[in-house]
Length: 154
Image 1: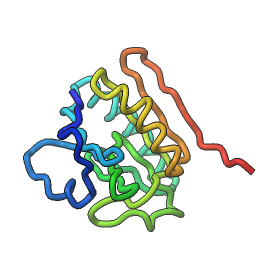
Image 2 (image 1 turned 90 degrees about the vertical axis):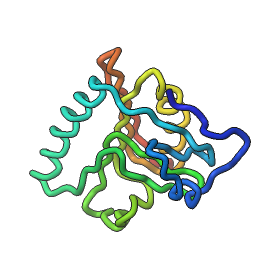
Image 3 (image 1 turned 45 degrees about the horizontal axis):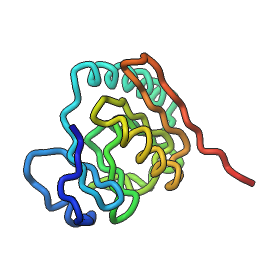
């Protein structure tokens, strides 16, 4: 189950990069959240969706696809590891050796019981506030995908 690793302490990206305990974490607004290993159902879905999207992106020379664990650095207190992310060819400059610096064009999260609150509430808000153009929430239990698109307000 995902949980706040330490209450009452705000973590930074520097703190996050110094953790070497074998666990996987995300940094959500200064809270260090331990993320459990994905289930086999989660991995199957990730593989199927990832394969189809990657094939399309590569065939059409549209950009790059990355899979968790891959850090997406939004700011000093927010670093997430989306299940699947896409970065268009025009925005390749946000890809650096240690991480992705900025909002990907598409993020896909496959929810589980332990991640639902973060994926449906916290991350959805974060992704919108940092300008992720499209966010998919895959719900294996419901066999559904919810798609959220960021709309420019003119």
